[in-house]
Length: 161
Image 1 (cartoon, rainbow, N blue to C red):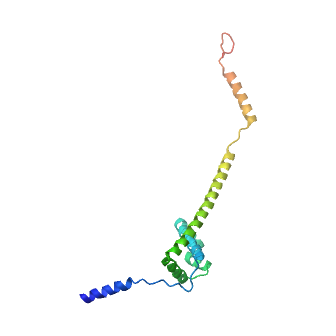
Image 2 (tube, rainbow, N blue to C red):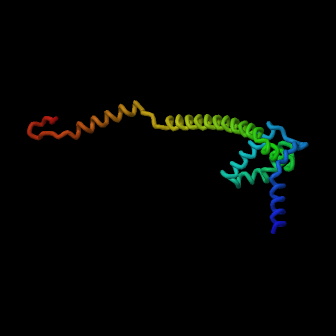
Image 3 (cartoon, rainbow, N blue to C red):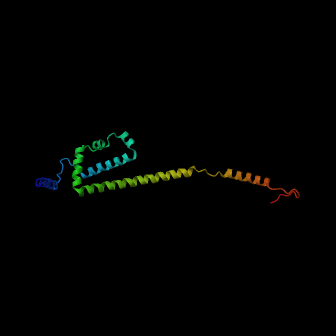
């Protein structure tokens, strides 16, 4: 019993040892890591919107990103683990990503507002315009019809008003 307790205690003690994270030899720079994570966030969001369309255009999104940035998955995992351990660096990376996402959001909101403005102006132009000549003729016809529909007093032969 004592020996099993000592073994468990030794394993727990060794597991809790504070090891410093070593910097990988092929560490990805913070700016490039921010760009990679930004693209991964966009692709993961695209998966949520239309996964079939994304898979039709890009067979394996992660490999696609690795190919674009000329890195491999091991390099990304090691760099990500290093930056995760260095929380200040990781926070700075995510702040860059957040700023980039906010900037893109503003751009797309402006595009959506412009598109809405164009659609509204097109809708406004599609309304039938009043034809003033046709309107005059229509009023004249209505006036003639009203005159002919007036009741005539047969005794006096004068039109009633």
